[in-house]
Image 1 (spheres, one colour):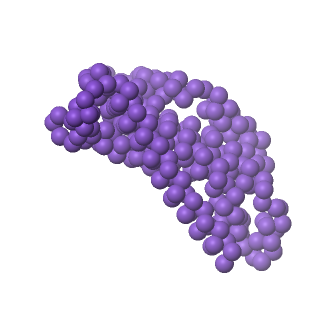
Image 2 (image 1 turned 120 degrees about the horizontal axis):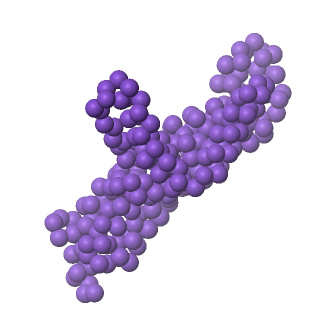
Image 3 (image 1 turned 45 degrees about the vertical axis):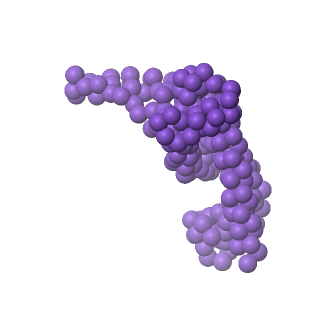
Length: 238
């Protein structure tokens, strides 16, 4: 392929595909960032339930992580994307017989990725919980702190520092897993690169661009998380 053709394909405008891929990158980042707080919150409470004194909570948390760590991510996505509309439609038609339900690809992807991410993040949080000595809790209670204050002021700062390296790996996995949502027609990075590859017949070029995009996002994430980890270490030292 002539060099000029490559640069034409990788240009911004009607003859190029960079603008389409760039819009896909924004969707990828938005999906990952929207999933992250939901997954972290669910993962924290699942880990908390796993070490709770109540057997029913421990059982429910273990079932949750077993299911969503055991199912392939793509199967989970298909089950929610095609199954959730059927369930919602059945419920809605009890009140409105003519109603139809469509599930947004972004929302479906966010839900599924949150469930998968939280199941792995819960194990990271659980290991961090177990690494904190019991004396830390007892010390908080001894100076008059409530259970909530002890968790927020004593345990949580240590928990975040201990769990952070594992959560960084979970984040990188989440970033890569956003590409799965391309199969349900969400116009993210891989989906737009695939469209460009099919239209132009230059599959290697555009899938290489997609690979480079994910690699750059991973490098930027590593730089950002490294800064956050150093900040957490300095804060704890103070």
